[in-house]
Length: 200
Image (cartoon, rainbow, N blue to C red; front, side):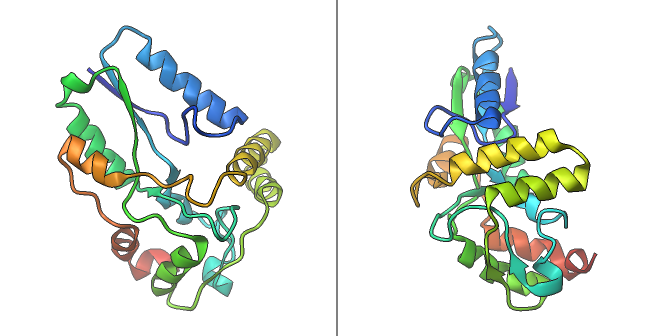
């Protein structure tokens, strides 16, 4: 029994981009491998907010410029911890083999709502001022010295930015019921990070 996570946004309902097409292709390869498998499809990882290279102005200026999506768009984030809860539960459900599930952390948020939750973590008011997908790509390319990575992120977020305001919302209640797990909210995860992590 194999439980596989795509590690990023995947599925036919999302716009085509290099990264989305690759993760979707990986999902289909696993499901068609002949190995009894369950595939988990996370959204954007909540812990992406922790490394400073994606949120360089968050602690110093109280500006959240990630993700590079419209400020009206609601996003169901995925915490690695919630992904782990679902993955462990999925290993006990061979009856679900051959299926794939979009997963996430409860309560989709706009950028402004996320910024408000982060203000308690960094101990200052935070506003959401999203950069463009191209600006994020350039920032990541510079941080890693990898133009290819920057190009792929520009392409992916440019595709996601064209979706409707509610198109990145996932029904996490269905995941909880299917796998018998209790998922934590974004607010609970951020509180668990602690002030020490914010100051690091």
